[in-house]
Image 1 (cartoon, rainbow, N blue to C red):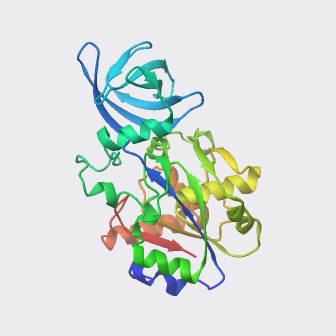
Image 2: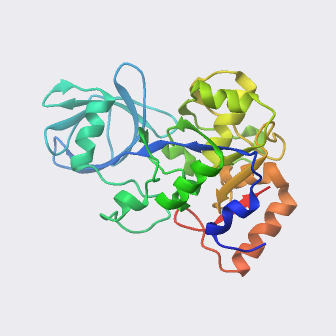
Length: 298
């Protein structure tokens, strides 16, 4: 059935539990220079332990190199990882800083990390449009895009009509990494930090129907169901050979070919049905990706 997002509630049962991701996108893209003067572009990936950060860097760097940014911010290259990420420590006027301090500085000098398939520079409008109306916990470098469809008004109605729960999964840049292996079981899934409050765990542990708003919520819920861990890093890859065990319904956008997100959709409906849905979406000229249209799987 084809309809508009404003009709979402017409398709949901009164007893459904709705789970959303309250992560907040940080201005994770930085432009700076090496001490030699060469330009670099840095994209924050995720915080690590001991004040270190996983990042992607466009431009040649080596261990020990210092990178200079605006407002007294700098970074030292600690290691180069095989997956293309670099491990760095950030400094503010030569003093080592925490993630909270870094995020505050990024608010002033960073850029919204638009997905790689959006071929333009970020603008002021993206600061609100690429953020959910209920975003709270800073740390993501990509938005949980299914939730971008909710306006303030519709979100208030959602909370008034349904049992609504939150969890946090800080979406990393690895979410855009395609599956490039011949057999999907050989794909190495990226990991992302998550935290699930006790109240949300109770909803997951119940037998009541559950709607996951987005693939990030789905992966977090399903990882918790399998591992019974409330805080940690999830690297769960859902696909037709590893199907959901708890999530009954999914609200999600239309995703890139060969992406783990598209395979997650296929884990709900099967490969043939997923291909059929996407063929219809293309024929109907649905918009794909982060600022695109959504589908509801019941």
